[in-house]
Amino acid sequence: MVLKSLREAAVLIRKEPLLWLPGMVLGLTGAAGLLLQAGGDSFLTERLLLLELVIIPFLLGGFYGVIKEECFTHVTSDDSVTPSLPGVTHVTSDDSVTARMPVTLGTFVRQGTAYYFRLLLPMLVIFFAALFTVFALAVPLMVVGISPESGIIVLLAGVLVPFIFFTYFYDTAVIFEDEKVFTSIRRSIGFVMNNRVSTLLFYVVNLAIVAAVGLALMFVWAGLVGGDLEPLLSMGAAEVDALMPADLLAMLGTGAVMVTAAIYALFVVVTFTLLHAYKVCFFRRYAGGAGVAGEAGVTPLIPGDIQGDIQGEYDEKGRWYKY
Image 1 (cartoon, one colour):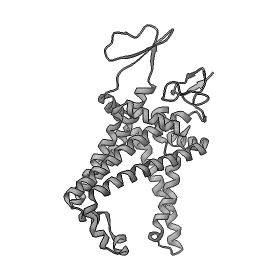
Image 2 (tube, rainbow, N blue to C red):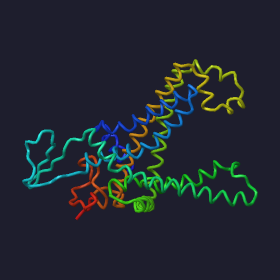
Image 3 (cartoon, one colour):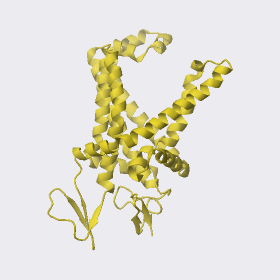
Image 4 (tube, rainbow, N blue to C red):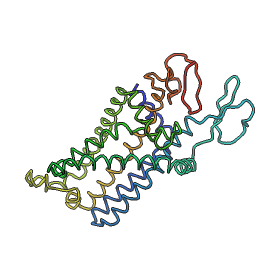
C-alpha cells in the first residue's frame, strides 16, 4: 500500500504539470542563494532565505489546493450543470453529472492565498514548541555543568526527529480535512499513531527517494565539475573535514558554481514535488485509519485502484466509507 501511494503520486504529478511550480520556485531561489553566497553577498543570501521561509506556506497551499481541486472537488447534479460550458470536464452516470472546472494558475494562487495563514500558524506552533523543548532540555545540561554546544547536534536530532515524525501530516489535515491550528497537529499525531507501521515505511521510502535522487545528481555533478575539484586530492583528511560549503564554492570556478546551482535546483524540484505528492496520496489512502483504501479509508487517486467492487459514499470532509 505504501508503494501504491508512491505510484499514485507519480501519476498525479505527471497528470498535473502545475504541481511542479512550487518546487521550481524553491529550486530557483535556492540556486540564486548559492550563486549569491559564492559571490560573497551574505546580506542578499540571508534575505533570500527569509523570503523562501515566508512563501513556503503559500506554495504548499497552492500545491495541495490544486490537488484538492483536481481530484477531490466534485459538483454533482441532475440538472444544474450545463454540458455546453467550455473547458469543463463532465463525467456522466445513470443519474448524475459531475463537472469540474480546469485547474489553472489562478487556482493555484487562489488556494495558496486562502490557506496561507491556516498553514503558517500550525507551522509556527510546531517550530516554537520544538524550540522550547530544546531550551528546556538544554537548561538541565547547563545546571550539571555540561555545555550544550558539545551535544547540540544530538540534542537537536533528539527533539526535531520526533516532532517531524508525529506532526508531518498537519498540512494535509488542514487542506483535506479542514482542520484548525491545534486540531491539525492533533490529527497528524493521531494519524501516525493509528498507522505506525505504514507511516514508518512511508518515511523509509521518503529517505530512499531523497538518497536515490541525491546520489544520481551527485554523480552527474561530479562528472561535470570533477576537474575543478582536483585541488581536493592534494589536501589531507583534516583539511577536507575543515572545509565549509562556502570554501568549496570559492574553490570552484564560475562555470562550476553555475552547474552546482542548477543541480541543486533540479534536486529541490524533483524531491519537493514527488515527496509532497506522495504525502497527499499516502494520507488520503490511510486517512480513515485503514490499511486498504476503499474499506475504511479513502478512494485512491488512481481510478479503479480499489480492490473489489465496494460500494460507499463520501462524508462532509471528502473521506470515503463503504456501506
